[in-house]
Image (cartoon, rainbow, N blue to C red; front, side, top):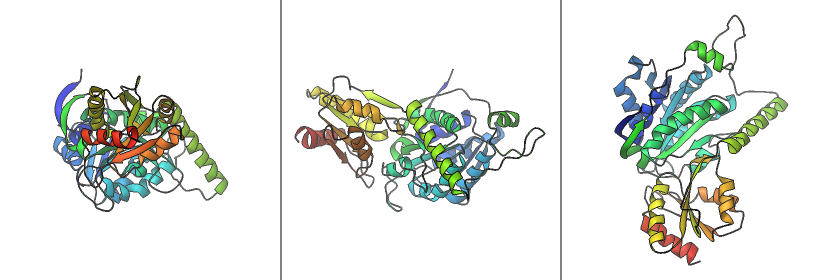
Length: 360
């Protein structure tokens, strides 16, 4: 049996990380995600499970501590908010190149620059297009509830080890700060060093009697070998698309118009669907749960059914580019959003749909 609690999203993912068997958390405070580190320091998992919890001197230090821990096969996590994630991007790129598992939480705030501490979805490009340098992608999960913040901690670690890759949970200030009931899963025992050596043969765990010492690096001065490595990474990303694309359909079966939204925007749009249906407008909602891999095939299929789509985001329009690529010109695709930390209402989304899509 699980355990029911009333928790903030930031607290829920911190508790879930402990329960998932996390070996180490390395972070640095920044609004609106500071509760992750504060919660971990308050429950002191280092006294109960042996999990390391450390506030580094900077975001750059934190991500490189994750690099070291992951290189030893340890289950590690970091969290930050938009400008802090930017500082971590070099290390994230290194870890993607070295094929190391990592769980990253980004509780997005408005930007660019230091921007605002209010919620936003303006980091979509940074999360889904790599964000750092080189040909790489992250597996990206977008929670729409406190429950999913907890669930995605466990799922994120599973995907990180399945694909040997950094995984990002792209949340925002609404989901991170709001309080909801959450059903916490039962704790999973942390792996022993013997289990790590057995399940992570690539890890640097020292020279043993039956194997040489592994070296973790993303550097290769042989261009041909590096090209092969990048092609191998791309094959891994294609496997993600084939095996682990996730989405939710809401009132899509008979829909004539479609909203596409993730995270907090999807919660708002679900109410918009209810209001539109009450007015006789057959509106549906497609919620991407994974932003990469993106539910391209499902959106393409729905493009053959509906008359138009509206991508709803708390940004000037970033996900809309992926929606348009999926639709490939079959029907009109437009964008509606607020930015700078402003949040749209269900009524505003419906008014935009009527004006931009139905009226158009």
